[in-house]
Length: 46
Image 1 (cartoon, rainbow, N blue to C red):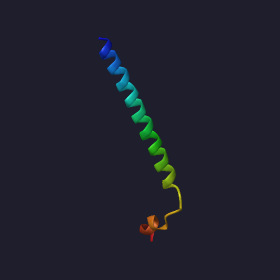
Image 2: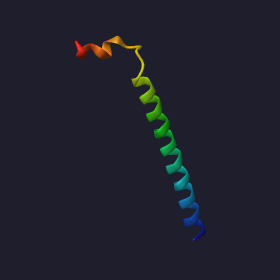
Image 3: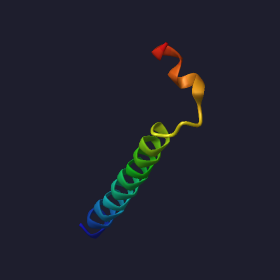
């Protein structure tokens, strides 16, 4: 049972780390989307 509890703790840590990584990646993508550094991205407006 101790091994099972240890495995659950490791999986919880991995899931939390994965969620944090995805959250940070999403925030970076949102911030990049508001920039005007790529005029080609607005080509469909014309």
